[in-house]
Length: 187
Image (cartoon, rainbow, N blue to C red):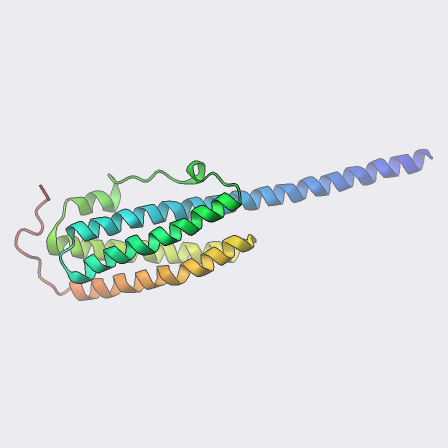
């Protein structure tokens, strides 16, 4: 009887260890999902702001229409990110890097206008979307969260489209002369 009780305790201990290990894997996955959703949310918020800036400061029709597209597409994408975070009980505020409009490309772009803005904006969008495509594909390949995989699979083509549009803008604007005074900071 003692041997049987010891065996039952041992079996129960193993079962609990496996259950806890499974929970740790699930918690790790949720953490990875939360991290990816936080990055997507941050990226969407930044792209929406960059799009708005392009609408306000852009000179070339391609730049202003791309800005409108960015606002529309990244708003729709962010709604999907927020919905998935809610379904998975993830607090986006706690996993999203702070959106800063005063540093990096945003600060530089706010000082430009006209063709100088258009060129810098197109380059920033090309660099940003190239990185976003790479990160989204990597996250899709490593995740085991089916819902996140579906979200990323639907997001990647839009990011690739944005990257391709930015590349065309960079190519088109490379030969366009800057307008006199376009390099002057905005007042």
